[in-house]
Length: 485
Image (cartoon, rainbow, N blue to C red; front, side, top):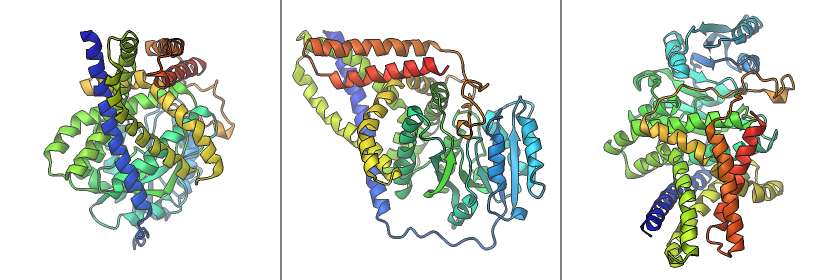
């Protein structure tokens, strides 16, 4: 009996954490709507004269997309005499040869090719080593899977209207959103971050993050904040917090769009999710205590904690999902009173708030068309289901980050499938092995499927919807992992 009540305690602890997180999300949604009603959104005047800009392109083994990236950057609508393009190449394959051949097609542009024979510090190390030779007052950064639009710099630079503005971030859009169900669900998640979270935080003056790419930094801000550091897997989030904690202001502009490729297979998604989740947890350990001790308004501290610890939501989901099995059995055997769970009904408010964030972001991205309203009916529950199915994988990443376990920076393989010049099966960067966690995901799919069957057979529907979402999510994650290895 004591074990069951211990499980109940853990269950309510997890649900309480989810509820607090949902309050932060709901507050961001409120500020998103407030931002939309703000009449003072006219862009500032263009700088006169236009400043010198360095565009940095960190590259590592990107044979499928590097030429597309260079073409896009070469076609930026900006005075050539004010533009420097640094290619930071850590590649160990023929990517370097492709780069050096491609830049010859643009003899009038100021390219600087920097090749490292080692990957010390990974992406952060490459950015830090290149910064001393960056000639620009401002530094724009694009990862290999991005295709910046020609007017990107013309649109972004006017927002450095104050000398205290250190970074301007654009909104990611998606080159291959409709390629598959997986890419549609990724777009569903990313749109919530870029349309609701980034706007909601920025509108109220809370800390936001540079998203690692498709943004512009003031070079002096990078240096003042301590330059790029490689002690976390999310060097972008780390530098963002160091800069804002020193008083630098960030600007997020959703109307400046930066198209990018979404990973089309689950193994690539998992490697990206692992890096983001673990790096976020590492940054939480590094910055959360300092933010609490510093002189920031309570609202800023609250959103900073929700931001830094958002990766631990997967631990809460994993914890509550397994505790729910014991609690289902305890209620069924009349060892735990059903009334004990009535109090958990308040947690449903949290799920409604989080669902509202994703629903509004999806409808906003789709411009509130009837087709998008119909699509939301099935995409929203499916998104929640697959997110739950990634709880084991992402919980491992979050726990490693929180406990200080180090691991290398694993790049997300790029594919460029929409061009028709490369195939999925022939991609040499695909991750082929299956870790133990994948097989556990398959086992969890069977476990929660069994719980759904038992709930129906015994007429005990307490966790039926929750278990059904878990069963579907883990099963889809497992099957997709097998199909795309």
